[in-house]
View 1: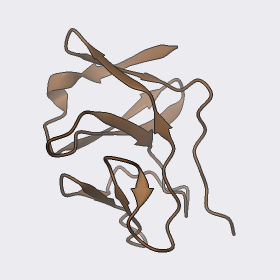
View 2: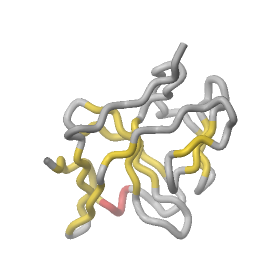
View 3: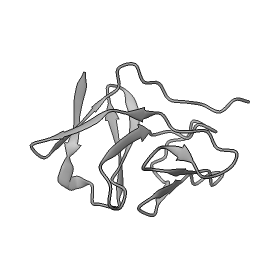
View 4: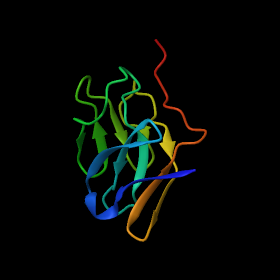
Length: 110
């Protein structure tokens, strides 16, 4: 079930935004030369919200321990990082929708 989360024009290409979809904290990103993607909005290492993460248009960096992810795929670019769970996204008539059904955040093993 897709949930309306924001207008497309509130996310610039190369930018990011934190939204809530069906009680899930979600980071929306628009990677350079890519499409809008949605990933878990908390760090898998510390469960810290990624609202203050740095995003350079491709790589998202957690502000606490500097874990990094390629936001085209959600895969880590830091050797000890865990991938981010990805949520399906659709953009229709300038509105961004995210589907959280069956997707849970991924957390690093202790």
